[in-house]
Length: 125
Image 1 (cartoon, rainbow, N blue to C red):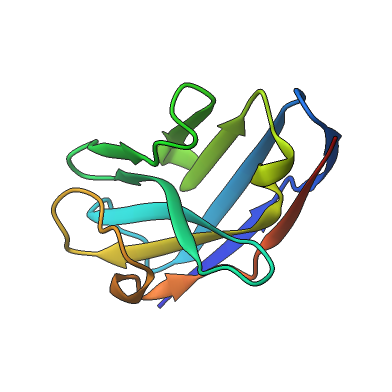
Image 2: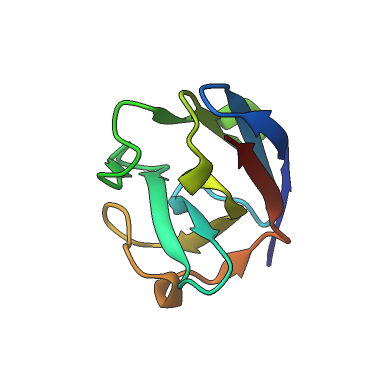
């Protein structure tokens, strides 16, 4: 069992930055793929970015390429999401998710086994 705890959400003006953190605890292994999803009101949950802990492959949605960066700290079992040049359309609840034993970064939410509680990101115009 793996527990994921997100932090770092908040309110920011358009053009600003935020950094989200996802701390993993429990039975953590280096063979996990971890993703950041977001869900805006009335919309489906979508994968924003992800990283495979074992092969270092990453994925970025087109909407965030060049603005968001995912990184990891193996010693702390923590994944970060640095969000720059934020736009009002980035407003959503952001979730950290993990799945073990996959190659690359799974793209759909149904493929992930563990989820954090979510953190709200609000970007004002």
